[in-house]
Structure formats: structure tokens, C-alpha cells
Length: 306
Image (cartoon, rainbow, N blue to C red; front, side, top):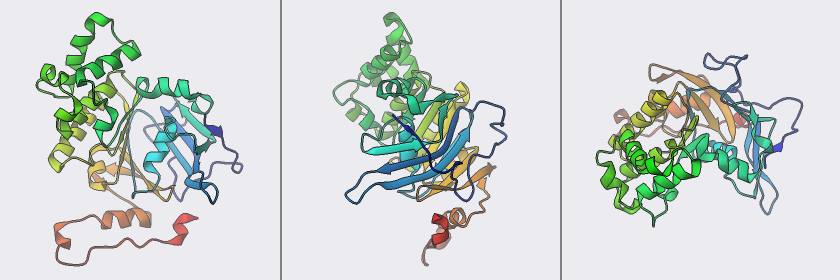
């Protein structure tokens, strides 16, 4: 269960927070997801270590990317939302709402029911999400049964349709394969089909293409973008690749050391950053011009942590 936070009289934000109403979510609308002053700590021998420090986010059925270096708190923030951090994590928030429902009071069973049915997550290595001793088709059918979307008679047909929806050319053949028998890109397509089977309203893609080569990476993101638009879903795209997210997100939330540094609206695939950290990340992107010389190094400032 997620605790209610009592850290000061108002939510604590980074230098530029994501709580300001945008054109996608007006102040009067009930947002799809609303997070206020989210704080996450883990126990250690030296005492609690806070890894997420006052994160705020408000979004509708839009595409929001969350970027930052490894260890910035991107993934742990949204795993906390789904109750996936385990007993050692202390999660506190002033507000943690999904479609107006307070997630802080939900027990483990209620959070488990929400996963998949209302919020889906696609992870970096899809094989970790599959049972290695069940065929892909059987696991998709099990998902349909779990969420009661169809009577038994129509489940096999729907399973084949789901695989076809994610552009798998031979759905019947792939349905009979085990996870280790397909490529990484094919496994990610099948995992996406599984996550979409319950028709969630929000999809979280957590470094979903990091393990794939550049060509397959764009194909998978094109597919995710297509399905999000067709189904009018919300999308949270967690990544460290700024060039990539600029093409697939309406706005970008930049995180550093557990805090939100800045929120950037994408403009035709370009990012107009103002915070020094965001600008440093953009300047550190590898290009052919840098070959043969010194690579740019991001200069961090202590003031970013206050």
C-alpha cells in the first residue's frame, strides 16, 4: 500500500515541474494520471535512502516521454505506480490518482487487478515477461481469460488477430512458438500484443527498445505509436534516448537524481530545452562530427540537487 505523504504544506517540485496545466490537460479536466510530491525511499544499513524526491506529473491521453541518465528515477517512479517495488520500498505521495481514483489506498490485490487491465507495461527485455515453458499463443489466451474479455470459443481467433494487429505476418505459426524461439523484435511485438489484449487506458513503455538494433527500434516505436493513436490511450515512454523520444512524444519530462528538472514540449521532433541539465544532455548526444575529437562531457552543478 502507498502511504499519504506529509512533507511540508505543499508538493515539493524541482526547478521546473510537470504539474502546470498544459493544452493536453486543462485545470478543469480529470487527468488520466496525476502524481503530486511522489517520494520513494529504500531501506539500507545506514538508514532510508530517498531515490525519488518530490516528482509531479499530470497527463491526459497523450504521449509523455520521461528521460534522464541511468539512476535518475525514471523507471522506479512508474513501477511504484503499479506496486512493483516490493516490501523494502517506502512510497509516499500527496496525490497518486488514476482517472480520479486514489491509488494510495489500494491493496496488493487491487493493484494487481489494475496492472494489465487498466495500465499496461512493456519492459526492456520482453522474455522476462513471458513464461519460458508456455507457447506465446497460450500466454495470450491466458491473458484474455484472466481479464474475461471473450468467451472461450472466440479466444483462439482473437489471439491470432492480436498478433496480426502488431504486424506479425504469420500469427498462427508464431502462436505455437516458445519465447526463446523468436527474435528480440518479434518477442517485443508479442509482448505488446499481450499488454494491449486487456485494452488498457495507459501504456508504459519502459526502455522497451533499448535492447534492439536501430532499425527494429524504430519499427517497434512506430507500432506502439500506431496502437496508442488507434486506441486513444495515454503513453509514458521511458528512455535515455533524447533523439528517439522527440519523434514519438508530445512533451518530455527530464529527470535527474530523483527530481524533475524540466518539462519540454516537442516541436516538430526538436527539443527546445532551457535547463542546463537538459541542454547538457542534448549537447552530449553522439554525432559524426565528434568522431576524432573529445566527446562532450556533461558538467553537473550542485544547485540542481536543491
